[in-house]
Structure formats: structure tokens, C-alpha cells
Picture 1 (tube, one colour):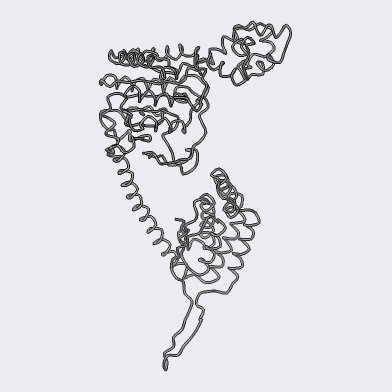
Picture 2 (picture 1 turned 180 degrees about the vertical axis):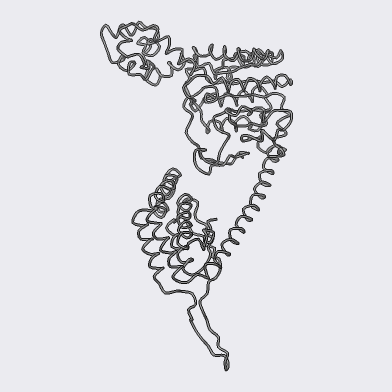
Length: 538
């Protein structure tokens, strides 16, 4: 985008920014910290700091770092007998075979396990608890072990830029207790006033990493970041995640579109959570909406990818850089001027897009008309050869057609589509065979063009004849029945007409695959005299 939207330009005036880095940003897939991404985040935070913008960070990742540390020290405290029993590479975490065997074993070996400090954390008999509770206790111990590792890493990175950071560990009670909250406000304000960057995290060693319950003020670091943005009067909240922003459907799906702005009434498809994090896109959407709700001083939130090394810079730098471009999804306070501006920009973009779509449809119709005129010059036998090529192609390409149809069926099942519509949507070997047979029967019919349907003598030597001729270009809109497309296409080709098709969105993948097969067959069957443009899929 060569020029910046006004709604995004307004964010560059923020004077206090909260940046939340999720686990998927801080850590790699193996749980080790990502020095590349963390280094880029610290550099961008340093840029803001040098410009006099106050920055607060909320960082995940301590639990992942702690797990590696706990695993290492757990091995160091094991006896030779225990090491031999699990082998050199077996994990000794809560879900490992060793931990499960240890819980079920009795006698001297069981006492031996009890004596190791690591396994007391996991399998303590002094404090009975369920398996679920013991896993939370294990994660809490990992978080405690990993906090020092994480802060040491941040301290090392920031020290290269002559910036100091401070750790702030919070629990839900700190926001419920008025005295604690007042102390917290003072601490944050005092740190910011002297140029120290507060790095906030949940105190999992105390809260036990318990996750969501209905009465929680926050259930993960996303919602805690939103709470902090409201509580500490931040102008802007930046949520860094592992995707480019909020999409209209899971980004792994074909055709997923990034939403530049998320309205409060919008709903989207949510994909799977990242491997190590507690949240997910649903959590980030809820957190973003919470951060900018009416009454909050935080007027905007951006969800964008922490893997992009210019992510923060794209939102907060002094000037817009067209080479970096606009990134992420914007959330704004409902009924605010910022939201009104963002909605206006989306409406203008959609209007421009609709004009563009109309131009494309016009081009398709023109190309179809040109090819239809060529089709009308072909003999009946040549048009018959095209139809036989289409019938043969449907049978030859049935595997690819059924594979595309399965994608549509899976999406319909996920979306809870009505069973009657799903039945119409489904393609089978038998349906494709029936379609091929029907197209061959259409091909074997007498030529429908040039047939004299009636004659009338109006005067001596003046005879009025009614003769069948092509219409030109047909526009057919059909529901989510992909088996309709070959039938409609065959009738159009037999009668010398071009065709514009618009099918139901539930059959998008099936329609696209069938359209390609028919297009290839037309060009092959006509010997190149007619191109696939004679039948267009809008």
C-alpha cells in the first residue's frame, strides 16, 4: 500500500504502548527461545524508548524455558538405576513413561523415586491431588525455574542497547486487592518515569497456571495484557502472535483473507492453538475487545505476527514506510472516532473492490462471447467431439474431483451445514459416471442449431421461418450442487452458447476443480479452436 490509512496513522501518536509477546513468538517449536525474534522485538522497543515513548511488555515463555531446566536437573538428581530404567533419551516430565511407571510402582524403587526432588514436585504423596492438578503444579514449578532464565535473556538483549528492564509478576488477586493494585500502579509509574521497561508475567508459581475459570479477571497472558493496558492507561496494545493477524477463516485454509479491521459484531473461523501457548486466536480476539471496551483509555489494539521482524515498527515508527506496509488487524473502541474512520475506510475499500470485481466479470463475459461466436462456426460433429472429450475427462480425473469435493464436505461438516445440503454437495464415483453418460447422450442428439421450427408465408415470395439459433452468452446461478456444472456446460456447448457460472460458496473447491477439467477438455476436444474462456466461473 503506497499511502497509509488515516486510522493507522493515528496510532503513531501513542505515547504509552503495551507490547505482548506470546509463547509462539518468544520460543521456537522445540521450546528454546528464538533469539532472532526476541532480538528484533528488543531493538524495536529500544527505538520507541529513545523517542520518549513509554513501553510496557507482557512476555510469555518462562514455562517453556523452565521445562528444559527442570528436565536437565531432574536427570542430574536421578540415581544410576533410574537412568538405566528410562534410557538416555526418554523424557522424565509429567506425561513420561517413567513418571507413569513411578506412580504405579511400590517398594524400594518407589521410595527411591520419592527421594528425588524433581519427582517430588510431580508425584508428591504429601499433598494428594488429581492428575490435572499435578500437571498444573509441574507447570508452575517450570514457570518459577524459567522466570530467571527469561529475564536474564531480556536483560542481556536490552543491555546491548543501554536499556534496563524490571520484572513484575502478577496474580489475579493483585488486581482485586485495592492496596496491591495501588502499589502496583505506583511501581509501574515509577519504573516508567526513570526509563526502566517493566516486563510483566503471571506469577504461575503462586497462581498454579490454572487456566480459565468463569470468575477469572484473566485466564492467560493475552487477557492479562488487556487488563494491564486498561489499568496502566496505555494508548495502544500490540499483541504479537504466530500469524499475520485475524483472518476470516483459519489461515491454513485456502482463500483465507486477513482482516485489516475487526468490528465488534464480526465473527470468524478459529484455527488450532499454537503448540506451546495457553491462548489462541479466540483468546486474542477476546483480549483485544476487552482492552478497547468503552471506558478504557486504551483506544486501539493491533494483532499481528511476531515473526515479522518489523511488526512493531510498522505500527509505531515516526513515518509510514511503504516498503514495510500496513500489517495486522486493528481493534478500536466502539463508537469512537477511530472506529468510525476504520469502518469508513473498509467501506471505501469494499466499494472499490466491487468495481474491480465488476470489471473482471465484464472481461469474462466478453471473452465468453468471443469464444461462443467461434463455437457457433463449428460443425455439429466438432461440437460433438468436444462433448465426448468432456465426458471422458470427468471419468479420467475423478480422483482429483473427489479430493476437491472432500474439502468442501469437510468444511460443511465443520460449519454444521444442514444435512440435506451436504447430500446435494457430495460427489461419488456413481454420480460422475452418470454425468459422463448423460453428456454423451446429449452429444448423440441431433444438431439443435439450424432447425426450422415453423414456416409461414406472409405474401408471395415472402416466407417467415422460425429457426433455432444460439442465444449468445448465458448467465446461470446454481446452488451448491457441483454435479449441475457439467450438465449446464454440456447443454451450452451443444447449443453453441457461451456460459457464465456462479455456484454456491459451499461447493467452491468442487466447482473450481470441475471447471478446470471441463476447460482442459474443451481445448483438447476442439483441437485448440475454442479456449476455456467459453465457460467462465465467476
